[in-house]
Figure 1 (tube, rainbow, N blue to C red):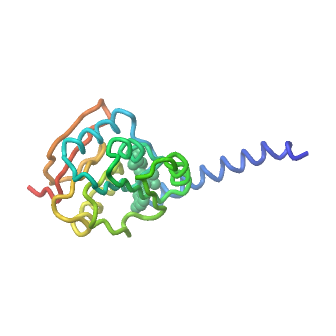
Figure 2 (cartoon, helix red, strand yellow):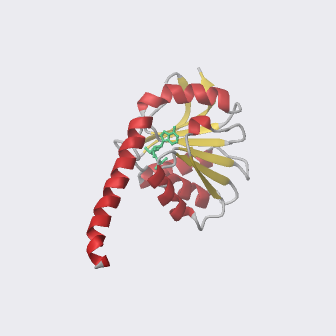
Figure 3 (tube, helix red, strand yellow):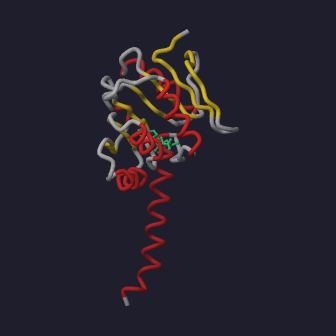
Length: 181
Ligand SMILES: C[S@@+](CC[C@H](N)C(=O)[O-])C[C@H]1O[C@@H](n2cnc3c(N)ncnc32)[C@H](O)[C@@H]1O
């Protein structure tokens, strides 16, 4: 008897997850796409190049399903890696994926309401439409000299300090904030 409910439950869960992803995308203007492996490798390589302090705080703004957070936690075992994600299901999945990593902490919420002044490095992979607003927010929220790595979408009128390209989609750029010309 109970087994007959399983297909209904699966359909319900699929619809719930789909609706939740659509609503968060509509609210933020940013889909919950994951960085691909070569892009994650480039993010790590650029932050290695940046020579972060040993116990750096690295924050992924919109940490999605957790791919960069996991790679960063492994590449910088003495750093603290923080992820902030507004979309519930990616957040829950990333919690499961990182539960064994002691240097990862994840928060569910809007990063525009977060306190970033202790960050040494910021990682993001968002959309062109939010980059200007994000730049203005980071101008107020970060201490000068904070490293920023942005996957695919660049900040306009900011000096790129180093760049890596892993194919058609994946330009990954490093900034030393505020990086004004
Ligand atoms: C393209 S995904 C990238 C995920 C992850 N950083 C990666 O590179 O694999 C962008 C994520 O940012 C999240 N996001 C967008 N705006 C946000 C906000 N204001 N606060 C928190 N998360 C946000 C979206 O829900 C989405 O999961």
